[in-house]
Amino acid sequence: MFSKIDQIAWDSYCVRNGVEDFLRRIPCPADSYCLEELGNLSAVLADQQFTYRIIDLNQPRFWYISLVACSRLRDAKHCQWTYNSSLDLKVEYDIWFVNGNPDYKQLNPFEHQFSFELHDVFEIYLALLVLNGFLLLVQIWAFKQYSHLLIWLLTGILALKVTGIFFNLVHISVFALNGEGVNALRIMGNVIDVCTQSAMMLELLYIAKGWTVTSKQLQGKFLLHAIWAAYTVVNIILYIFMLLAADPIRDLDEWQTTPSYFVLVFRCAIMFYFLYELQNSFAREDSDYKRKLYTKFGAACLVWFIYLPILALVSPKIAALWRFKCLLSIQLGADFIFVSILVHLFWPGGEVTYFDIPKRSRPSATPDADRAVLVLDDESSEDELFERQASVRLKSTHSNGVSDNRPSYFSIDPQSDENTCL
Image (tube, rainbow, N blue to C red; front, side):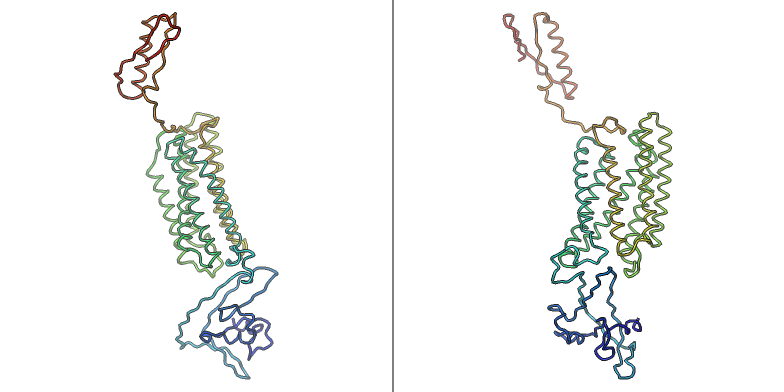
């Protein structure tokens, strides 16, 4: 490493014609500047011991700081680097990396603290939060109309999606202010997103089995829930692995590791199980328009199932500087489009109803409100009047679930054109 660095790195004693300011000796003197900074103190930021100023306007690239237990023999003949294996030195450091000149950080506060591959992530989260938040409000209105586990689950999926995006957005916003963020919120947001993905898969499997479409009863509950629980656990294990075991220096995303390959194979297996159940439901269905639902719904779900394995195959071809935000945009966008389709399918009041889901029961009116005003005209006999009265009382009794023993009285005036129910 140092054989290449020595060709361009400036050193006040050994390489005075070097063009790049790469090297610093540590520890720096306490409450003072590092020795390499003494010749150009104007380039050092206030309250800092050293400052690296990197200007590369042609293209973004990754830069690293390496702490190496090497020292240089500064003699006129060699200036050799030597490794000191017996050195027992504990180094405490606080190094602040920023993107752009700190004196002008206010020009774009959501890029200054971030590496280039995280630029525009704030805007992505904000846009998807607004879209999913609006969709959640729409779904809440539908949730008030119908009462069923499928509606509950779809509403919960949207609520989880909004919560996960919100947590990540808060972390990004705080990171833009202090360069640290709220890591606990980031982890919680990602775990919630994993649970949201699993809940979406459960909703699809419910519909594929024809629940509320072809059959009012859900068949094969144990196998379905066992597959879903296993997939959820495997996804959580993958996230924990990426959080603890993945090397941040390696040019890998979460879908280029051994656990991720297993998750993708599991996802494809569930896709085939989904198609199998969908075919069985299609064969049992007699209604033509419900069969069209299975056909169109199956095609849309197949795209949702298969896009992630395809994305995992394509992602290594995307440059590391653009990969994260591309994958994030595609994943969040695909989930939003698919959940929008589900909201549309379950929307109440459509011309065609695919799902046999009962509406929420509303409180019945009071007994007095259920009573009709009976009018005795000149052509009605008194016996007809009391028969109609008994019918109204009987209807009131059935609608309220209790007997109503209060008598009804009528004021009948033969001389009057109007007859009043008292």
